Image (cartoon, rainbow, N blue to C red; front, side, top):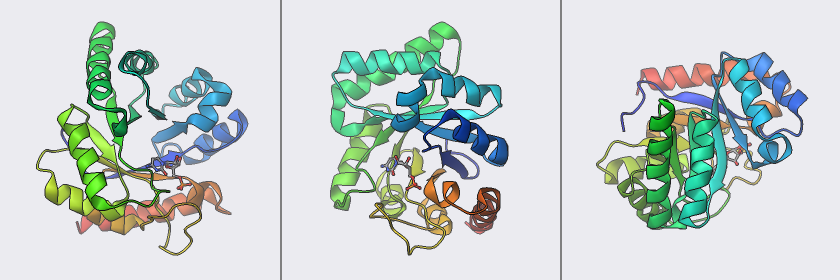
Length: 233
Ligand code: C5P
């Protein structure tokens, strides 16, 4: 999988209502072009939220972290392809059979619709959980060997994964904070520049922007950090 030329910020749309989602997209698109829809918003609104984002011109990262028997995950992935999402997540710990079924399903459905397939991104260990890096490496290698395009990991493990995994893969890092102090429930946090140095392609940012007094200013600040760090990377 070809990596991006320069890393991008994805906004985690972890809000309660369609109106709030619309307001953030209205304020932040096209500075931010990809919006992450997780279980919170998708459970409440389903494909409606995805349509809304596509109508605005934005792209969708569907973060439902699939984990089920292979057939069920394959069907869910095919449904996500029909929704034309840019990328989606599934748990690597769901097992090789599940991952391979997802990869085949994404390709087949995309071919049938003549769409590009979404990026399939494997969740290693949630960044709210403590873990050891051996476990993250084992899961990441397993996911990539099964044909996933990339993995979600904390920026703290990113550099190690880039060193130890020879294949090209997409790295998605949540747990980004404006400075590495306020941790809330994220146990493994990093700044924008640390994530870029670690080799991240997509930096997922939620609360630091959603809860900022001025979300647009905060976004611009973090985009500034991003281009400065990417420039000297
Ligand atoms: O608010 P915050 O910036 O911590 O948001 C991080 C986002 O990334 C949340 O939507 C969370 O579900 C997601 N995420 C994560 N850890 C993972 C995968 C996704 O925190 N391993």
